[in-house]
Length: 435
Image (cartoon, rainbow, N blue to C red; front, side):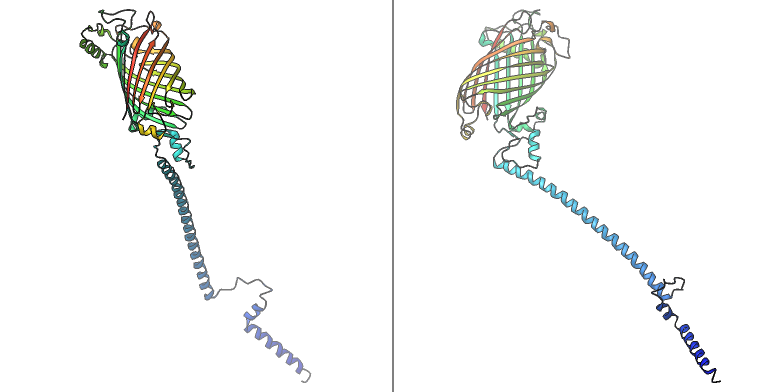
């Protein structure tokens, strides 16, 4: 018995240790957690499922929150961009306002019909010297011009012409003014409208019927709109003009000449107007320029050129102008101004100028000789083979200016315009008033 007593004690101890391990399995797993991976096959407790659902709900909430946050960021970004664009617009508006304030400070008007003026106003650069801008002339004028050969004791060919010109800055808004040729440097624009009537007769008006080989009766009447640009820095002037009207009996040339002759006791009524150029459309565009090549205090020499295209005239011409005397700079304005303008710009109120001009002209088409472009029913015209393709025209005259009043007297001479024609001359008178 004593022999088996130690063996019994050992068995009891071993049995006690094994029973304790079975009663605490969690302690067994905890003791081996560092050495073994977790056993996912174990059945989860209800407390574990609740924590998992909370975890999933938190993930969904976090996703929604992050989405809303990103949307808010995008909205803030879009708003920032819109604010940036508005800021850019404000800067552009500020630039325009700054330039307008500078212009008003200089007491000048900008001509927005000109592309170069629009570029200046809308550009980002602010230039208070206005180096690339065209201003609008503030002066207004009324000019009455009269041509007639009666002072040369003749009554033939280009026998009478009258023209009214009105120049005013308000005509900048006239719709046809936008059809004028732009200028791409600095300068001053003057806008105007005109009304013109010219009359032509054969070498004599006292013979009944058609005088073959002579000039046909003709008259035209048109309304014109024009723009004159002066550039005193470049010593340059350009003029563009659009004319619209009629040639033929609707121009009232016959009525005007017969009425004038009937009022003069020594004149007889002209014969042959029933054979005048028939009614047709007048639609013409003309561009001319003048460029100073020698401009001193008392001497000016300018080159000039003109081109006409349309149903009345199609031609090209070029020549020069020479003038001398007591005068203001040629390109500073249109040749006259009121006393205040002269005082502000240190110009002479009184001018006395002598001048002469010389030019050659290449003739492409002349409706007063060849008839209208569309209506071919005229009884008598001059054929294109009998037209003088190159003619010469010269003039000499005097100009007197006192403040806002101007008087021009000019004698013209013209070489023959058709085969077997004669040289012709007439006198030009013009009165201009500053309004």
